[in-house]
Amino acid sequence: MTIQRDSFTRPLIAAAMVVASTFAAVAQKAPVPTRVRGTIENADGDTLQVKSRSGEEVKLHIAPDARVVGVTRISLADIKVGSFVGATTVPGPDGGNNAVEVHVFPESMRGTGEGSRPYDLKPNSSMTNATVSESVIGNDGHTLLVKYKDGEKKVFVSDMTPVVTFVPGDKSELKAGAQVIAFMKQLPDGSFETDRVSVGRDGLTPPM
Image (cartoon, rainbow, N blue to C red; front, top):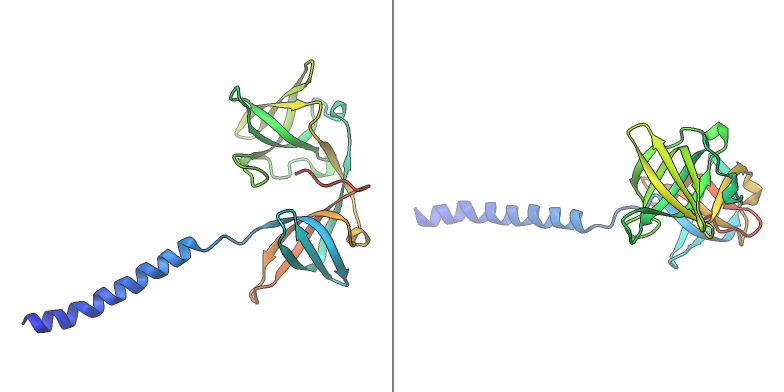
């Protein structure tokens, strides 16, 4: 009886080990990135070769319906009460929310991604897309109260914080040397495709 029980349980143990190792492999697999920030090294037809800010080489196919937007500098004074903005923030030493960058959406993009969520620009950063309801001018910047559907947040924007907006762009801007943020997805064959690219104007590196 002991021999029969061992012969029955050993395959089960082996199978369980295979399942456990499979789950471990899945858990350890790095997530597929959803965006790449970097410099276009080569543009050949509908293919971009981008060198990311961290040094990786990424090859992207440009989708036929890809949207290209330009990113251009504006001033802190251009952030008005009623503006719909996106603010990347990190926790400040006083527990507040310090802006790393702010982008002001044009009216046609109002409501884009409204809300607040973790973001991958910096450690512990978050992205908040919301409407400015108050703006208090201080000696070294502005403190904004931004409100979105499920909440609100106070954001400090220093005089040195990059502030940008979006303008209509064109695929002709996707050329070697351009600084971009490309949103991408992995296709079934393992390659990457982008359907939305933000490109810096006048040598600007998109700060978001």
